[in-house]
Length: 374
Image 1 (cartoon, rainbow, N blue to C red):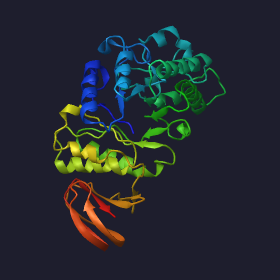
Image 2: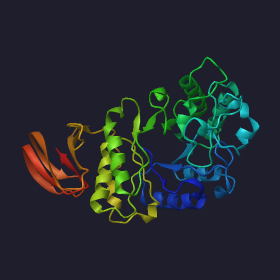
Image 3: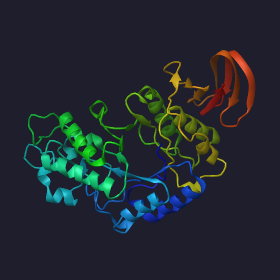
Image 4: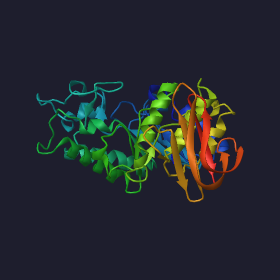
């Protein structure tokens, strides 16, 4: 279970913003256990132990305050990439995947160059010194910074194609796995390692959790697309890794039905519950959507078919029926209750009495329902 302020990212994040959310969490959201410092704390991409101006040149004090308040610090790292101006790249260009000209290979020559501060360069997981560096970074973050949860991003570049490795016999998958094994040695066996933008099969056995979708957002299309991606991968949760459906967002201008759809979709993954808002800005009327889904069940919904319209979360003492209407038109959705059971609305606690057999729900456009059968 990982939750915390996560919507202010990139160069906009500051220590003051994190502290504001930390105060709010400890007073009003004791259910939230982790506070994640997202992208933006480092001086340059690649120099993860060098704190940038937005954090006053020192992030360790903030991490210490998180621990002192009884919460756990989590931190974002993109372990395999570095920008050209980083100290890592300037001092150790030989640690990176090389091009045919025996110079570090610019990522934009063979793939996406990076979402900002590009083009990125990719650390070579077959290079012994690069692996020592990765192990050192994560050992410092674990032992000195106190982080036990690591959100790894841009992992794909650790398996970037088109370059030459220090070990010419190694494949790019082997390079990626060797680099991941190095950072895991530093982080410790009990660390939670979340993979984002990671090569899926090559990450098996190396990550604890997986971001199973694109980043979510405050627009309906992104909410709907992210839900489809996550729910289609529900089978992975608890089998391959712990699912990360990305953040629950409760601020913005979506309709109340769309916010309920979003919360239901996050809950139905059975994975981690993350709050992605500036917590004090969540409207009081929507805050119960977050409270209701804490803690996560750990059990993903199983769907009747690939339409992802009717799913069931089977818990020891109850079954939760998930109904999703992703269309722009109202729909009638039917589902079967095999044995008599009392039914209530998960969100409103409305009691529908004891039912059995085929039931039909009239669903407005862009909405979801979550029914508890016990």
